[in-house]
Image (cartoon, protein in one colour):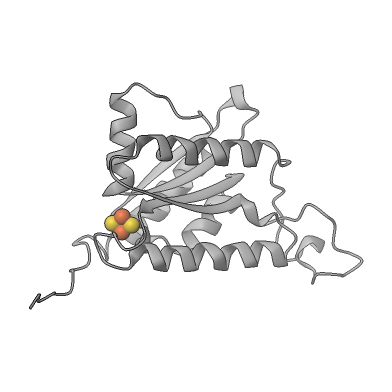
Length: 188
Ligand code: FES
């Protein structure tokens, strides 16, 4: 009989929240004039996604320079607030990269992450912002090509969209869907 024990949460689970937020804000604000100032904040789990990133670096393959990475212990630590903060602080797109389904080192972190990405997509859509600005990808530690493909997919998806408009809660963009005062293109 196989006895399984609960996988403990990352030891820095409590303190990582503020650190992650600070890293998100810094990544979203970092500009790159050479790419029309487009920014994509990518959350990489410290296990499979990071290993794939490492393999990519060792192979001297570069990612699109629009990508700004934020390392997290597990994608399960990425909250909707992190994703929305990235968009509100300057990113035009955001994505989460983690272990394959069923292979999260903390058991279900990537399933929680997917739920949150889908939630944020619905939220963006409800205020007129293209939901494809927020996506999730999974990969094995050895799958550098999939890691690179995820970055290129986001780079192209965001490049095909106009820059993200940023508004406030009082902005007409926040008006309910169908409202005549709501412009297309949306805002966060
Ligand atoms: Fe990679 Fe959880 S450790 S997604």
